[in-house]
Image (cartoon, rainbow, N blue to C red; front, side):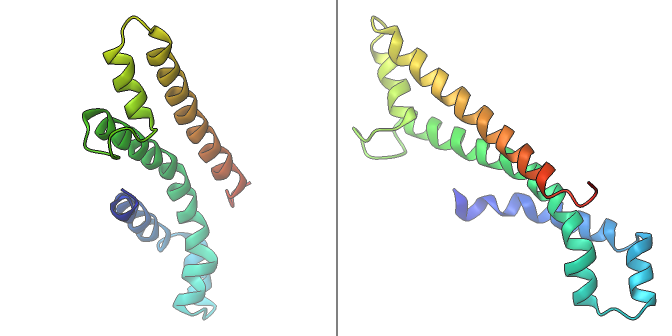
Length: 130
């Protein structure tokens, strides 16, 4: 999943770089004679990282949900391997034991919420505008 999840970020980073090249401070740096590499790494990249860090937690949660659902359907880890998808499948198979499904739901919702909150905290920490 991580092999292909970077493709969703390419459009965001490219759009931020295209937007950033027309900003006033980039034009001023170019007028002062800064090289393209200096402009990209010192001026445009920190602003592009804000958009990337905003989008990244949602990519991670999508990957976790995808892996959990594939494992629930039997296409993920080998049968019997401990995972959230396997726990959900066991909860579905054993309706007389509701704590299996409830535990899987609580763990999955807490994990995904914490991923988003940690991503938002990272975005606030690396925001160059603050």
